[in-house]
Image 1 (cartoon, helix red, strand yellow):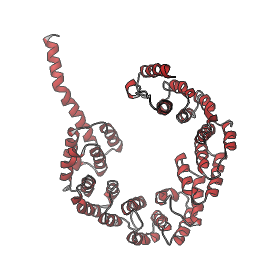
Image 2 (image 1 turned 120 degrees about the vertical axis):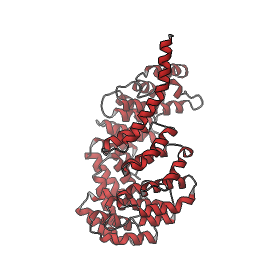
Image 3 (image 1 turned 90 degrees about the vertical axis):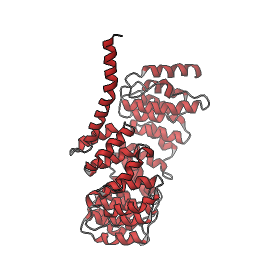
Image 4 (image 1 turned 30 degrees about the vertical axis):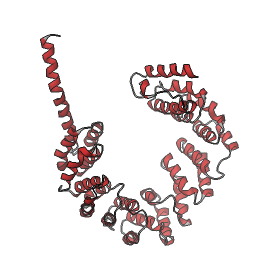
Length: 435
């Protein structure tokens, strides 16, 4: 290597870290942007960063950010070891904005510095309306009477409905039980001018000991404005018995879900309160819902007492509907009936939106017959199929060989990597020796 090359290398070694630090500083600066998209991009890029340099840069700029950027900065600081961030949190206890004081105190209390709990409660109580939702986002995992009292101060008739819902959700976690103080704070909101606030208050009160009247009022409100249900849904508790008039509102929401995840959640809520009503709604979805909703309805129906028997599942397994066939096969497998395996193997090889679900379902079968199909799916053209195949293969091989496991990380396979064939080759070579 010539002297010129050595000089260039030395220069690069000197400049490289400085350039990286400059890039890091630029990303941190973007957290203070007035553009939400710019803040979001910077946050996502910084999520991959670790080290005291990031903490130092955030500490130097966080007080100048808008509250939205400050929340991103706090999220990033939470990813760092507490030993690296503790000094910064202590400094932020004296910040001008109550959000920063609350976020810092919450992290310190969460890591054992309980002497800061009074300051946390004061910061929560003193937060201005524009930062209250951000303050609530810092309180997860904390339980304290003074903190609960501070959060109850957010329950005002003129508060935004989402803030009221969030405050009540946090109070349920902080207090772990319905308290007389929170009930007393909620009752005036049942007559608030804003319909969203009224609905939130009624949803909370409907789960109490005197819930019949609030439940009736809420049911009437939901009949007039069904979309309100989704704004207060988080306030309903899965293990609480609600008056019958409100059960009908739950069933009405189940009949018009916005996603397959809501099918499962609402069906679980109705399972212990009105299983027959839930079964009827789910069967209607199964007959006429969208493809993803039909699969979710079938899964939920299988969890209800008497919802589906094996004869009906076998009929659905032969239906000309891949989404239902996949769920039927997976459900039968959970009933110790592996007869859906050939159907899944066939579906996993056919093009269509069902393929990722079929590959995922194969992971539940402890069968050598599934392995070759999963190997092929590891190099599929769709990332989701490759990801599901990788996860499913772990389940199948670990189930087949609980005492002779393949070292998955060492093979170097990455579903999102540009070169997957080397990892697949190692898997196939290992499989050839054990099958």
